[in-house]
Length: 295
Image (cartoon, rainbow, N blue to C red; front, side, top):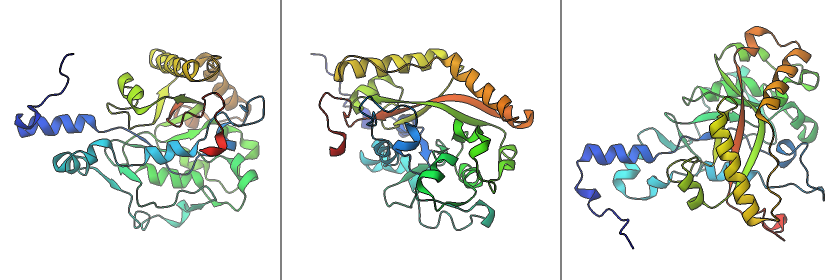
């Protein structure tokens, strides 16, 4: 068997070693609030009315320190160049008009890691959540806009924001005009695979530690490749039925229809870019006879 280890890595020039470590850092989607089963699988319950997957574990995994932060002192220092545990005083400068509180609001956790030069911010909360969890106040959109400025990536929201009839009256939709470009998540796909399998594809970071990925609907090649990987993993682990694949063209049309139905202005709609979210689940909850309640 060919030797796959590179034992001379420490002998490489320091600049080259550091660059390699940096290439290993994941570009993540920061869940600014906890995703919920109800919100994600609103219309996708299984025949027995159970959820096809647990959602929160992906947010927890995606907030752990990157793999290279645990390799050696040098790699850890590289990871800390732009990343670190989200500190308790992160929100000390949050303006009053960007305050948002709900039962799914993200709470500062001693293990939640954010990379300011690589990550993007995502809001799972939608107006539908309020009818389920209640006791919500403030502007979720304004809060996301403020949080998105802590990182470099394009902020993302769920497509249900454009069902204006259920939105909160006090919500600040002017926020959409404050940021030049947004992702609108039209569909969420769970890929049930191990970290090793995910790392081999390269879709979830070089080391498989970026468990949430957003793909533009216009990037059909990448979206279909991830769909194929999801289908392969699902057929291997479950009953062989494969996953439900949604037409990218139909998702694009759905967003256009929402804009027309709710008279979204061109100034706002032109900033919105439809996308699909892929979330890596390593819990094997799609295996036959797997009890979801045990996760």
